[in-house]
Structures are given as C-alpha cells and as structure tokens.
Length: 365
Image (tube, rainbow, N blue to C red; front, top):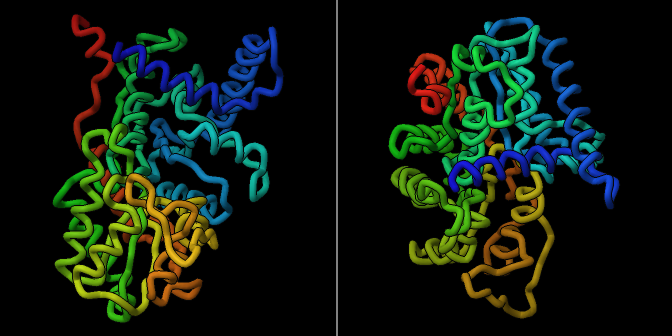
C-alpha cells in the first residue's frame, strides 16, 4: 500500500505538469504523448547544459509571480557560484504552479518541470551524472518534503522501469534537507539571522512572520512544531516577534493576535513578512492583499480563522497600524543569510553518506 501511494503521488505530479487540452477517448494517448514531449525537452536541456559530472536539483513548490522567479533565478546563480563542480537545475513540485507558469499567469510563460523528468534526464545516455544531489527548498520537513523524498525513492527503485539498473546501482544520491530541519541548530540559526535583519522593525512594533503550515491530516513528521519553536527562539530575543501560518491548526492570524494581546500588545505597528521560500500568492494575497470580510466585526470559522481577510486588513481592523508600509514582501530565498542555511544543508549532504534506496530494494547486490 505504501509503495502504491508513493507511485500515485509521483504520477500525479508528472501528469499534472503536462498541459492536457484534449478530452475523450484520446486522453490516454495525449497523456503519453505529453509525457514523451516533456521528457524530451528536459533531456535536451540537460544535455545542452551539462558541464560537470555531478548535478544539484533544487526542488521548490513553485509560483507564478515574477518576484518569485527572480528569487529562484538568483538562488540557481548562487548555487552555481558556490558549487562550481556541479550543474544546477530547478524543478517545481506543484502541478498547478507548473501548468499556470506554462500558461503565463501573471508573467511571461516559463516551463518548469516536475522532479521525475529531471531525474530521468540525469540518467540518460550521454549524461549519466555520477552524483545527484536533490535539495529541498521547503521551509519545514512536512508534506511537500515527503514528496521530494518519494521522487528520489521512485527514481532509485526504477519505478517506471526505464532507467539502466547498472547505473542506478552505482550512482551516488544525496538529499539536502529543508530550512528548519533541525529543531535546535536550524531554528536557532534562522532566528538569529532574522533578528539581524529585522531588529529595527521589532524595536518599532510587532514583526509577524506568516508561514504556510500543514493541515493536521498532512502534518508529516509533526513538522508544524517548527513554527512554534521558531517563535519561541525569536521571543527569547524580543517579545515583538511572532510566527503564524495560513494552514496550521491553532496558529492562524487570530491565534497570533491572541498571543500578542496576552503579552500586552494591544496597539502599535504590525510588520508582516512571509516565512516562505518565496513571496508568491500567499504573500501578495493572504498576507498583504486587500481581501476584507469586515462587517463591523469578524466571524471566525470552526477552526478559529477569519476567512477572506488578509493579515494586513485583519490587524488593521483589530486596532493596529498595519498597512502597505508595514508589509515586508520578501521571500526567504531573497535573504542571502537565510538562503545560506539551505546551501549549508546542501554542503552537509554532499559531505555526508550517500542515500542507498537502490540497495534497500536489492539488498542481495
């Protein structure tokens, strides 16, 4: 059952990354044709850009905002500079983001492909990288990070049966962990670096970081706790730091407000900052947007959240100075000292022991 679920996740990402425009009896043929077309495109990209015998694949959830694209491009450039012996590529794991990027939503059309395409391309004749490092650009080791792990497992176990088994038995696979993987080292490092950047803001009022979070049913590895731990680490520095989410139970903006008031903060400035790798749809809309369900009061849903209202408008109605001037619209990849934590994880992965998913399937070899 576990393997079936892994394969389903991988195939959903692959199929979702294709623009399927036809309907009816030809759907299966179109899916197969699109798969072939996209795999060929990635194969050609990898072959044309191959300069080294090792590769780093950065895996992000994705976005359709130019600011996010700029952050991703800057991250790829930073990786190429820091890891000169590696070819560096970027992949999106979100089928929705892949499709919308290809359609040119918000910005000019760009093609981002799902990780399985890249991994397969790395194993093609004429390329066959000797070492592949997959670096998660997730913030917490939650649901999306699990998908990253599953991509590697499927590749190493040759789930589609289209990769040379001898190659898989000898290729070195490495995995770089998310930003807040370690409860102490990573959390404290990120808290320290965020304070260096925003201590002046915290001296003027609240700095509220908005993470994504996972719903309880998808809280893989109980990763949501990293947001709570980060807030605790930040509050050891200043009581004006808070960390909430858009999708973690008991940690919505309403709960951030309750913690602020419990600490006696009932007025003043509230600076809002995305605690996500990029400032995309959530940052522009859920945090800094103009959505406002105020009607002489807010009605909370059964989870305690106020829907259809941005953080900016919510705190504004709650009596705080929270407007466009207090929105700090930067994703974490735009902050070099925070991006460096991800890069340190990549370095740790390279210097660490290789993954051995292939021999977990074939232990007798």
